[in-house]
Amino acid sequence: MNGDAVAYHETLAAGWSGRYASGGFRRRAEFFRAEVLPRLAPAGDWLDVGCGSGVFSRMLAEAGARVTGLDGSPAMIEAARAAGGGRYEVGRVEDVGRLPQSFDGALCLSVLEYLAEPQPVLAAISGRLKPGARLALSVPNARSTVRRAQSWLKPLAAAAGRQAFAYLASSRRLWTKAELLRMADAAGLEAEAILGFDPVAPRALWPALSPSLWFLVARRRD
Image 1 (cartoon, one colour):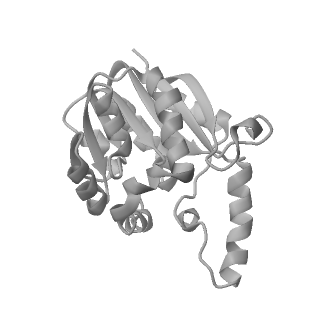
Image 2: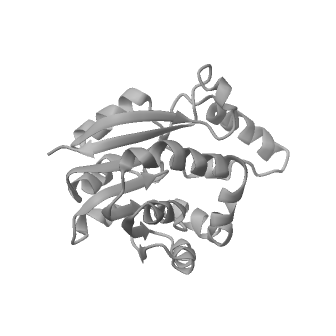
């Protein structure tokens, strides 16, 4: 993960888990718990790549998995360890291929967009999975209505002396649904579901809008 992204998340670590108590963060966590987690059937040893403060790691642990969380931000790992729910290590996501064990499943949520070369990292994650193991990942949608609006508003806010949508400075990569499927296939993953999610727009409008995030659930080919 690029240094700017790690530095950005270092500054947010202290209050990161608290963000999931309200607003779009809460809706994202609820969507994951209700619609993604049941498709994973977590058990055994799971890897959370870019685990942050461990919010989703703890969901896996509550569902019955033994979780190893990996993140490049020492402050995020400190926050994750304080909250518990798994074993957490500081490490570059680019080095996931060097991990000594294989896993029964993995998460990689809102990580790949921060990487200079996401394809090799996804392939490395797939390589640490046991045959048939599931992976859930999320990436920003290249055609997101909300994200495009944020990109237009960001320079206007800067001109007014305000900082807005700071994450856009380091979250640079976007995927269409077709591009995401091709990336997963190249990494040896067979897609089982792609779910759209938007933290801002009401759910009733999702069919008319292009959602902000894709959640992919895939299985490593045998």
